[in-house]
Image (tube, rainbow, N blue to C red):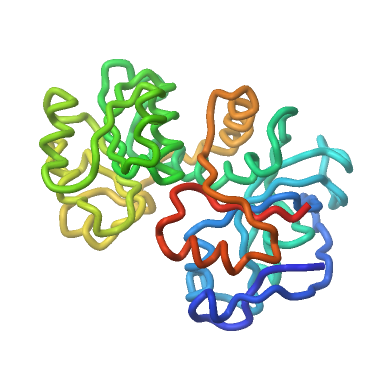
Length: 310
């Protein structure tokens, strides 16, 4: 089968290649799918440079949708031919950017949710959900004001929708690409750059209660801190170096309840109903993976990049 993977660590464009590999078999508690679409993420390129280093070769592609074609021992509640989506394990010789992928966790793909849209969900949904749990945004946040810095990222865009669904007021920072869409959801939006903290506080009528930073590192975390009463009211999922200097919380330092095993299925149903989305920038055939990688590594994708395999 076709698979994207690397045999040594280094620059993604230098080490990733489209290989032919053996079709994996699902072990106990796992299923195998015919991959229809695979989302690409910054984490894929970080794996190539040594994140979570381990045995090589190593596959890339951390989120997929497809059709179940084999079921491992002990699996119940799913049948061959079922449409599913989920995160793809990445520690083996192949991962999600392959003709076949083995999943440890999966969720039904609701009717009406296309494979590409389904493959865009797992990383953004689960990352945003756990970040909001770590930040302490309650299930009902009526009366609270939450800042989402970097609302034009896929995680930030997902987080805005989640916070609004909890009843909180959202102030979002974003570039021009998604400003209109964020305002249509009900968020108050301002741009990045000089004076961001003052603009946020003006929109909020004072300090915001909590702030989530999903923007790339180096994009104004000190400004975000100026929008809250104390730095501990901010959580970042990206700018770890600045966070330690500023007293900001880090997602991976938090001991928030990891109650998100259900959440991807819930948001897949909302997406199928047109009530939730992760914005998709472009879709590429697997053979054009290099163009997708170049766009992703440029930092200017402005939405999810997805590989279509079937």
